[in-house]
Image (cartoon, rainbow, N blue to C red; front, side):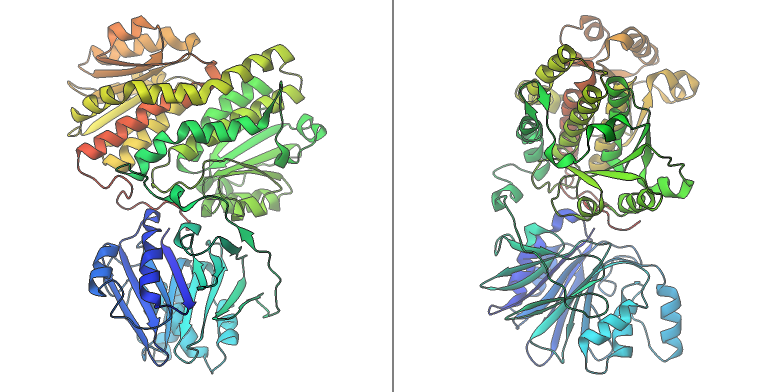
Length: 609
């Protein structure tokens, strides 16, 4: 959530900060602000609304002079969006400024204590206690003050801090919220994510938990919480800045929908060698895999839906029992994690707070953790015992598409690999599966080439819909969950996904004349039952959109619109059936005139619990 950018160098800071924040708009925000030091004073400008309002207010940064500064895009957690609640926050005499991502869990206790000492608070945020604590402890030594304040804070934070008394340096701190440091000939940077600095440098450091960074024009110094120097390894970003730009598409989401064939291909093909699967980074021996007695898949949102799909696939292909948990619930139910259990944590960003907490809970009970993430060097990638990367490239739109598809691909490969090692799959069966999985990228491209106009027209008829239902059985139910989430998060239409067999247990009472029901029928052994479910809703006035396999004419004859997907192995159908649902959601949102890439109240990387 939110975006942080900081800069020190030879150039004016404000335009660079605004440019960096513009590359982080995908993270979700409701206000923005800058703090710049001109060598003598701190100058702070902030406001509610989009980044353009801040840019207009500062004339593109021209009104803020200085070559050192910090910027922030805020997503409200404590206190409503307002100019006052916006970051940066500062002390009474404006000599210290702070930007913050995360949540300070004990802020009420700290605030009460400071108020008793005469401090007055201007905002309703948890962040303001940080800058007031800095003010309280500051005696001239910035590093010592920061280290002292960190001992008082509970919760998560990524901080950028500048002091009027130290006009040639600024500071960054991290605990459970992502932050990177960039270095170039033009200056030094901090940022919440790589796209903010990629225009200026490809050389970055990943800040670890409880590390403090001091940035000057000439040096970057890393310290642990005891202020002992820390040696860091620099990382070179491989992907090009064009990957984080729209490339002629109207929205990032549409661009990323069309990037799915390549992303899936990049995730699958390097790991398929002749008639076998090789996952070099997995670091699990055959003995480890044969010894698995149970798998927990833990994730949030769309990543959770890939886990629901994977439960069916892993149990069928590898015969290992699988439980799928929402990360926000996992550790609070006191899970029973016995010997022989593997926890799989799935996250696009690798920084999802609930998923990180679940990872740490599993490790605290002595359980091995496999992370499936898209971002190299992210927290989950570093803290998991083993990691499997999805090669989706940067995903900017809040609503995930290509990261979801690559997570599915990774899980398919994992299930097949486990199945082969455990002798559930013989060479013939594995070979058939490999042939089908290698076709998926071209089949996704086929759907994109053939169905867009039809879906676009259909979507235009449902921009005013109030309720839409998605139904399916087995793996199709997992696909329905994702289709429903996509629609609600970017179009704001109430949508629900149900196992089709549950309709008669209550939900069918909500079906009335004209209600749109999207039915998924890709599982041949459940096809007849799904046909019956279509008849049930249609007889009550529903308008039916069906997504089914090529040649399934019965579904076509019973539906108002049918989207056919190419035939593939029944375990892989989600990868194809989800594409029309992504397009449907996108075009409904466009038809309503909404901000597709930055839906209200949502953030790309949710780093608070």
